[in-house]
Length: 235
Image (tube, rainbow, N blue to C red; front, side):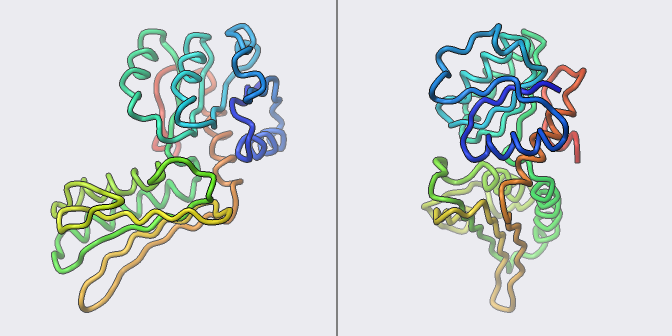
């Protein structure tokens, strides 16, 4: 499989290493030095693109891939305000998009555990719930896309919470404490607490390889497909 890497920071380099381990070929690398020069014809040299850039750049990168007829795997978070527009374009152009707030297989299993636990805890009003997420200092969006996914899962199952916030706390709000420190790849903890006891679940990434591996697996999954997919189509 021929891959175009859009974004060549730490994640892009990790994806390159994993892709080559899995016998794929990187035929195009797009970064700040050449982003404005890359044409649709350049993109069409690849079988699939993997996009890990910034929230500000992601939407235009996705559009460019769809217009080029190139399936695209998007790992950037913070761009989902534009999702409806991207969805419409993808349908119009019969494009192929794979998006996720987190490509780690472990995190996506954690999503399922989180949903199930929230469903159980809905019956027990004595427990309140909060979340903490820790990421490296270079991460631009707060809270993380993974934290937002976890929060939305909880809100969907837990009737006593109807919104989340990183600043506001009240009985109807799921508070997310967002921490940026060092080079932490990503840690997410959900805590249910009462006067009697606490229940916690945590996912702690040790490195970026889990995210990179999931993104390459997603790219492999797209072969021969059109439409819009997420990690739930793989897990």
